[in-house]
Length: 73
Image (cartoon, rainbow, N blue to C red; front, side):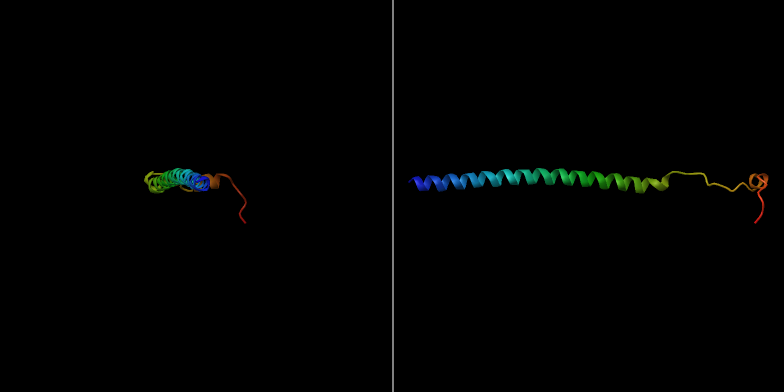
């Protein structure tokens, strides 16, 4: 009878350990998935809105360059 109780308590402790490990893995996986989805959302948003802003094109100021009076090579 004592052997049966010892085996039963060993099985219960093993179940408890695996339950705790399973719960920790589910919580860790949940945090990882949320982090990755947030990361991908931010990067996708940045990539899609990068071309949406109108930036003025820079033009070369030839008169300002000539006003510098740099020696020609």
